[in-house]
Length: 243
Length: 296
Image (cartoon, rainbow over all chains, first blue to last red; front, side, top):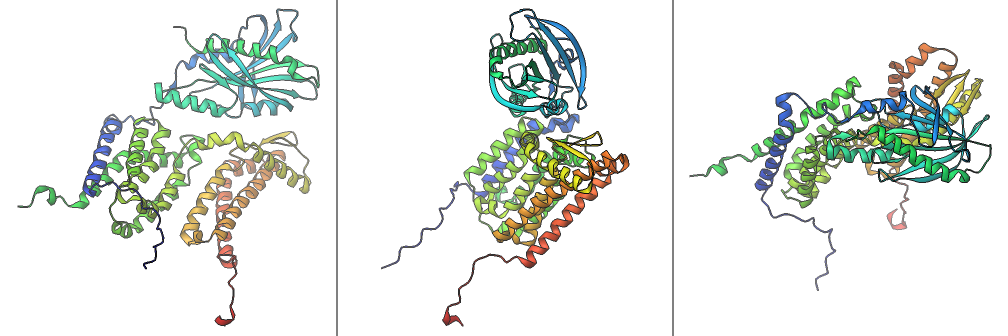
């Protein structure tokens, strides 16, 4: 009786093509690729990595830092440009037009991307470090921007320093949405590069509500959600040109 | 009368493929090297500057295996065709990140197309070295997650400084010495040096052949990470000390000038020392061999 042989490792699938045809096929694919993608660059000297995608209308982002932003229902009291960790932010201060609002004064910090090549990175860490805050009660809120149909996620937390406590709302805004983590912007940016060969512009937004120390921030959630949606709408209006 | 088809020597197909690959990826590789040498592209690109020694090393390893490669049977794995198509599509996007990533995928696809999985296994180390030296945006995506590492390094560096008698406060990732602030930023947290050290560790492990022993590999890579983190803690402590005490010249030397390069070289040398120690003192495996009475 012949012993059953040990089953050997499964053989890999093999295409029944002769070696020459495989190599000819590869040659064809590579030659087509060369002609389509890189031959024009040899001719004109314009390599694809030199003519990389840009942000359309990057000049529309500067006014978000240099000039004040109007929010409906709030009166703009003051605007200045401040420097945090060598980056420039636009600081806007508002007073409520509605005397029944839970918070009468708010501050808005805006940091549009300085240039095409800048990506969102350490803006939140810069702010926390500059203000020397103790952070607690972190949450993730969803802001619904009805006009642009965008669902924006934002970080909501309480920042306390020796002198003051704030309810803070933070996120990165881009025309089609928003999210506090740079990774989300990265993938939206990849999609816009593949589809339209342009970069997705971004603005770092931080909304500060002064609150009494050690107060629970959940009471401010509805106000913050509404304000956040309003601000997102206003910022996107400035970023995108009207058709 | 021999047909013209058989008169075409087989090696010219190989050379034609190689020539086309040079046409496609030659300028791109030159762009990488230019970026690494002149630091002209971006910080993310700098993270992969170990490719300057890694890519030639990978090419050299592949070249030394060419006899074995030619002796492998010519088989085409269907996945190879898929990978070549995917790499071509990525190359066609004409976006730098996607073109960069298409190189290792194309090379892997070609290995599978020509020699199937045996070819892939033969060239595995070269492909890994190329893939890990390909510039991508991976460092950017990782950055938000290394905040704990930055905080740890800042805390230990602050602790070291207090041991030496320097008045220092540590807040999150900031070190305050004499009202001067030093921020342990992601790059300063040594992420780049960690990547480079691990890459050089892979090269050394392959070159000395210790990759056959899992025990030695584990200790070597663990030791590499440890050396990288400890070295970075010392570097950040020194930088805070120089900045706080007003030694701006020394600070610039260590932070931007050849002091940083000296520190990197010392760290890589210590990897070689670690490897020698492991090869001298650590056995290949920990398993015990039983001595049966009859084998005496």
